[in-house]
Image (cartoon, rainbow, N blue to C red; front, side, top):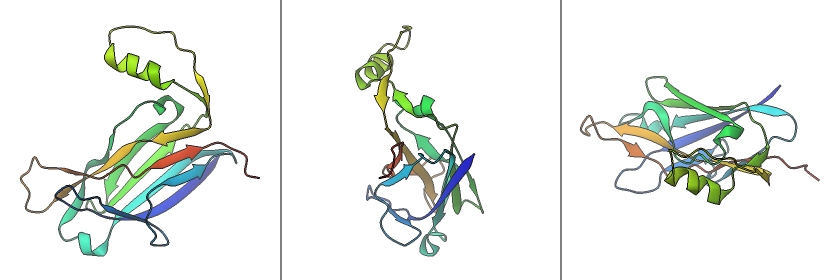
Length: 161
């Protein structure tokens, strides 16, 4: 079972501004596409606060908020903070590709939580892992949290030419 690890740095912003999320080469990581064609079953995303951010910021709670569940039966997502809240690890495991819940059926499920459904899955080769990073800033009230934009992680299952 193969594993792929990717490293990122994060500079949180407050007042609704987009956070700076950079890859290991210090380039903006607006979307990270990960091909699982080579039997990758685990993806580890390691987020570290920038040196300039560590005095005022910490990742909060488990570090993530999972925001969209269309493809979440195709993988498991868990996260944890460590190093006094300055590091966040997101693990994507049990990756199974090939099919997904159609968008219109997902909306039907959300609108009718008390109704059981039989669903014909659709073919799919791309799976968005929609989440936001959660942080707290020194000096904010205890109940205040800051949420990043979606870091745009996409699992793809296609043969590379």
